[in-house]
Every structure is written in C-alpha cells, then in structure tokens.
Length: 435
Ligand code: UDX
Image (cartoon, rainbow, N blue to C red):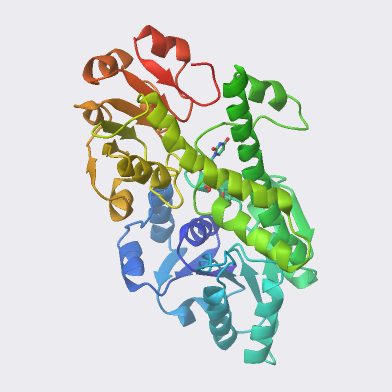
C-alpha cells in the first residue's frame, strides 16, 4: 500500500517509519524544511530509542522517504494520514485544529482515486465530520473516506508500542475503508492484535477516554500517597495490594510528582472542554486536572521542608528534568514547576539530565547544567531526583553522603529503598512512604 504521512512529529514519524517497516511505501511530509533536510540526512529530530536505526533501514531499503512537497506523497496514495500537532489553543484549553484543517484542504486538492484519509492526531469528537466537509467542498467529485485511527504509543517505548499494541482502534463505517485499514495493519492482524472497529465519533472519544483514565489512575495513587504520608502507610504496598486485583491492574500506579508530557495535560483539559460544551461536564477529570497542577507545585514545598524549611542561599542538585525517562521531551515536565519555585525561594540549582539538557536549556534559565549525576553533588546542600532515568537507580549512596554538604536526598520517584538510604547515613524523603 502507498501511504502519505503528514506531520513528522512524534506520532507521525514513528507511525510512518513503522508502517514502512511493515512493508508499505511511505512518504513522510512536513512543511518544516530544516526538519526534512535533517531527516533526509539521517538525523532524527527527537530522542527515541531504536528510531534512528529503523529510519535508516527503511530508507536504505527504499520504502521510506521524506519531502516538503505534499503532492509527492499524496498523489496516488491509498491512505493519507494526518499526524500534525493539535496544541492547546491559547487561553481556553480547546485543541487547536488549524493544522489539521489546513492538511485536509491540501489533501482535497491533491488526492487521486479512492483515498482513505486517516486522523492519527488526537482530535476532539466531530473533527472527522469537519474534515469530511472540507474534502467534499474542495473535491465535490472526490472518492474518499475519513477514518479515525488514534495512536496510543508512549514516548520512550514508541516503536514497541506501535508494533505490539494492546489494540488498534479504527473509526469508520465505510467497508472499503475498513478493508484498507485491515491491509495497513495486516502484520498486527496476523499477530491477533484486536482491531476494534467503531463509528468515527466513538473512536475519536476512545483516545481521550483512555488518556483521561490513565491520568486519573496516576492522580488517584498520587493523592493516596499524600494520605499514606499522613497516616503512616506505604503507597507502594497499597499499589501492589490493590493492583493485584485484575479489575484494577498494577500499571500506572506509581506515585510521583504528577503527570506531564505532550498528551495527558493537553488531552485531559481538551476533554473537559468538549464535555462542558456538550452540556455534560466531566467533574472527575476536571478534578484530576486541578489536583495534578497543585501537586506539581506542592513538590517544591516538599523539597523545601526536607531542606529544613528554608532553601535561601542553598544549592540543590537535581537529577532528571524531562517529564519521564527515555525521552528528551520537556513538555509539561514537573521540573518546570519545581525548579522555578525553588529558585524563587532563593535556591541555586545545578542539574543533570541524560538526554533532556538541550531542550531544558531553552526553557529553564539560571541553571548550572552538569555533565553527570555525581557532578550535581559538588557544593550542594541536597540532591533531588525528579525523573527516574535508569542510570540514577544505582548511584553510590556512600559517595552522595560524602560529597553533599548536608546529607539530604529527596526522591520524587521512589527509586530507592528507605532502609538502604538510611544505612548510608542520608536523610531520605520519598513519596507516600514512611521515611
Ligand atoms: C501517554 C499515553 O500512555 C499514551 O498511550 C498516549 O498515546 C500518549 O500519552 P506518554 O505521555 O509518552 O504516553 O507517557 P506515559 O508513560 O504514559 O507517562 C505520562 C506521565 O505520567 C509521565 O509524566 C509519567 O512520569 C507519569 N506517570 C506514569 C506516573 O507518574 N506514574 C505512573 O504510574 C505512570
């Protein structure tokens, strides 16, 4: 099958590359000249394990190419995917669909023969209808179907998530389009991955409902962690104790500094807007959004308390800046709330992140960026772990104790055991566990 993928952000690039690895011919299109030139030269604009090698392989084998010329990809394509950004519209949290609609106009002008137009971007309910209207206006005689096919991949595990998903959701009632989608996902079909066919509106909502539920689950365990701290219980054991119930499940029950990233914050907010506009407010998700925002702020207070109630004139070493490990993505990372709050209270910050420094430098100012975890300890009064990169999981606790000016370790991801930290002579603050 011939595929055009419009947008080479996270979702577009990973989906395009993986479809080409399934054996389809894929042309990835982006307006950003620099990005396309870099991709043509084998340079990947994001950090995602395994992506560079997979791009390289499929380009060499002739199934994958990059262009700024939409016509090159769209003319004669069996399926055109829209994977452009849908940022929060400034001010009100609604998803900004201008890039999606601009892509639809372009597709309308260029498509040839029966074309399946697929939204991979996360788009509010009803966006598919609007795309159909645009296509019909631009090409009154066009043969096409508009399909919703949300992507559930996680950053840092994107290739694996795409190639071994729990399910594929396809929103269309057009049988010809269903057949095209089956062909596109044939390798997964053969693997018996469930493919759930729904109406287009249902499919659009499934993506938001999934992300909101996961955000809710994280927020639930985060609030439970606060309660654990207040009553002397252990949140990890609570998570295990409830997670073994199959109806609950043990995943996404790691208490931490609050969720971030490119999806949960944006999608929970957009879903609450959709629900309010539809006259059926989602009060639970509104609360999740609020609780999570407050939590990120509260983490700075937790650190200040661990430092004896005052960080003015103190130096704090920070490990991990990205919203989670294995990505360089800083979008809505808890560090963006925590670090400025500490600085506002007079702290000096020195930090290290394995892949995120370049992105962090653009946003977080007045930080002394270090070249490794132990370098963040020099002349520091406390060490704070914000993101649980693997390389922070087995640090030499004795060395940390010896190097820090005062032996304060704050671990916002619970990656150490309180006993081992205490044995090393460090004062330990973690999340939802007796210290
Ligand atoms: C998420 C969804 O998982 C994915 O299906 C969707 O397509 C995009 O959004 P992603 O944002 O890449 O993926 O990261 P994810 O691993 O889901 O983590 C999101 C945030 O939740 C991170 O800030 C992470 O640290 C936090 N988190 C996750 C927790 O605090 N605790 C957990 O138990 C799990």
